[in-house]
Image (cartoon, rainbow, N blue to C red; front, side, top):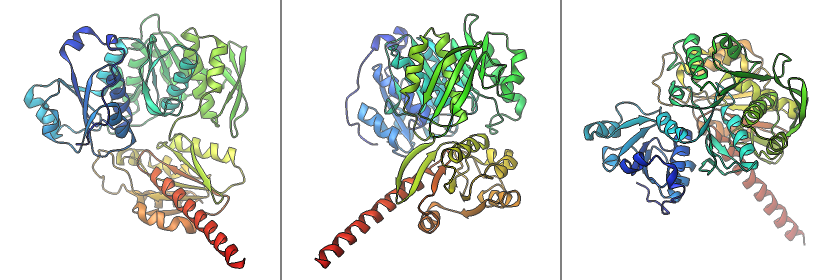
Length: 492
């Protein structure tokens, strides 16, 4: 166990349900370092609950929770849960986890992450952002707009919002804004008043057997809002449009197409995004967004739609968008050294990767684009194999590593090497395969040249490649400077 570095921070304790507070004091969270779990943990700590948890590694979210007063065990063990009143488990936790087994033996209630999020949302006016892609950015845009407007929302996001330096905050306002995870259907636990649906693509094949299954899940999600609520949905997305005839609750569409009530006219989306916003053909204003790319214009439109439904003034909305500082691991510029720009992006679905590549090419049309991609999950790689093979056509060079398994077991014939071979068959992009990170890192100095853009792409640990390479370049630059200084002194 890693010892806590600070005391609990009791605040807004009266926001919790009195009955829950009388029966629950200590909450144990298995997989506490995950993007969704850590945000919930942070809010619960600030509500005054005692939080314990476990994870396999002490990443940045775990370190932040330790400073807030959580107790975190590195590794899973039955002894970790003895004092818990309730156990919250991440979707990545298997049923045979020793902590789950012990909790069952002790009769401790076990709930999924989404059920705890649903309890928090029940106490506020909930806004839930769902969709196969764009959830984190859209949720973060909303968090920024509502905060800038003085509404002091509670926020739980799947990524670190740069404005907060965190993926969560507990506010005093009436709204709770949360990212809704469709990956295991648990977003159906939530009870939002307003939803966003950014898109509906085939994904999460470990849970959904086919497209109809994921369609059914989103259909249920949209029809579950109250009669006075609103679904804010992307009318440019074929998956969303496929569902609309069966949606019985109110909705408004947004997008670039003229069929949408809320739409954007893009003026520029290179380096930053500049666009006009129209509602029923009435100009609302012009938006300047620091994040480039058409996909980010769509994300902003979703956030604008929710903000209008919540009654925010359009001036406050536009101001919030202009102050948005981005999200960690979403086309995040990590740094530039010796002429190489390093960018990191979380996208791991073919549609997300294409959006990243198109954005990079639009922002830096003359620079060579090199991508290091770590596929995520065997089931996704298998089901979307053909799409993955055609995704990297605009990249100049692809550095491919082995599949990040998450919680999955290997599938025979589905691996990084087979994907590399498939890409070579349909694309002119140069592909190099590396079975491990060390081999890739050793070759990077010979591959990357001044003027290149180097993007680390994927939901796993691929970001470390870019961070380590930047450190290497910075050390090289310092050594070069030291050598030049020594040479100058010698000449004197």
